[in-house]
Image 1: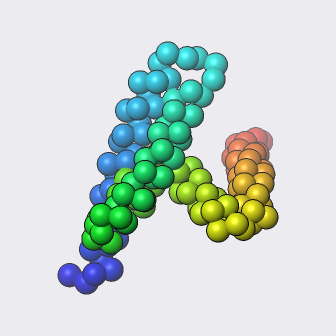
Image 2: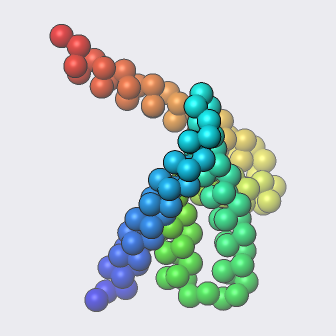
Length: 129
């Protein structure tokens, strides 16, 4: 098997595991609250905590890049992409690229909200006679 196939497989398997974890954790938390999406918030916070911790520890421990990718991109990417967004923004800030960090936050939040709104509008438009 080629290395790229193995990498894609590891990311996919990790993504499946992360998605299952997101479903379980988010569902367990959300059962306690009705009006606020607390399950999603908890998943995002846990994912951010995990990616911050694991990105440092796995690099420091010289863990094989294949395993790091499987965990950081696969598992945590399936668990929440908000963690990747947060880590990338943190790295920009740590590199003292504050304008780019702020631009990433503003552009991501603004454009993603607009895209979600546009997608919902388009879906509603498709079913409206």
